[in-house]
Length: 142
Image 1 (tube, rainbow, N blue to C red):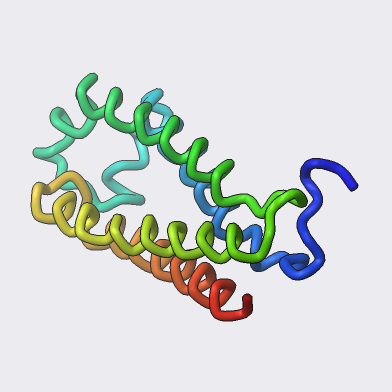
Image 2 (spheres, rainbow, N blue to C red; image 1 turned 60 degrees about the horizontal axis):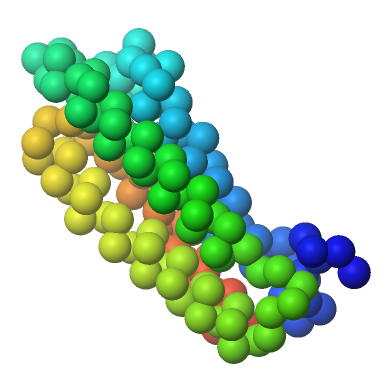
């Protein structure tokens, strides 16, 4: 049994989805922090053109680089490792759901501040709700 194995009661792929979601967001925020997605802000995220100087500033890049580190840690902390018991994994899934749903007001603030348009916020709201719902479903299965 290796370190990346999961306990038999949490062997479904769904138990890994919240961790994989955080790792996806880590890659995503690193891309934004390094400026690799600057060309996609208007067409993909719906960022108003007048907000581009703010959204592409070094302060926002530092913010997204910090989100990268946070998402890496959350991805590791929510992965159901083989040495964990049922209560630990239940707590992990609960905290993953809290994390994903608690980020929804941040998305509203980004929309209100003009950092993203409805098109960009909508993508993240749908994904966060899906990841949070999977985490709650997993918790209910334990």
